[in-house]
Length: 163
Image (cartoon, helix red, strand yellow):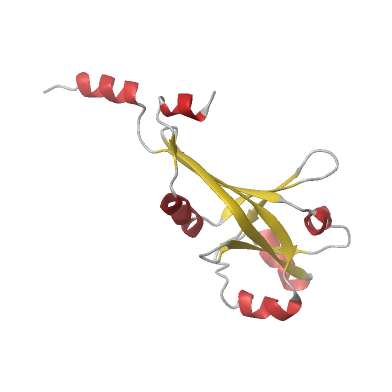
């Protein structure tokens, strides 16, 4: 179905303000990076700089596929979504580039990052393992949402209410 057809059912395009609010309020999404076969998809916690970039802390290992494909990628995508109910959800898709932040920039950026939430296993691993900071530079933003009952359900429920 096309977006226009789905609008009839209550789906809406998000404007830049809606997208901005979602980026500021959420801290988890899914990174998609191309590979020779299927794309590599990884759930990640992130920090949004309020302008044009997301930041991720990678725990490095001796053979990290995420590091390898991130370092080779020309383009990447990041999906952030929030589902409260079947009639109240939003989804933001970002397209951009990903790069390791040089060590001379890392300290200044890390001083601003809010890392109040990330999975415990990565928090503990970061205490003893090497980490790298990656920047996802946002080139394109798009978002869709549904925040109310679809029209046909609204009219049915409103017409069946006792007066």
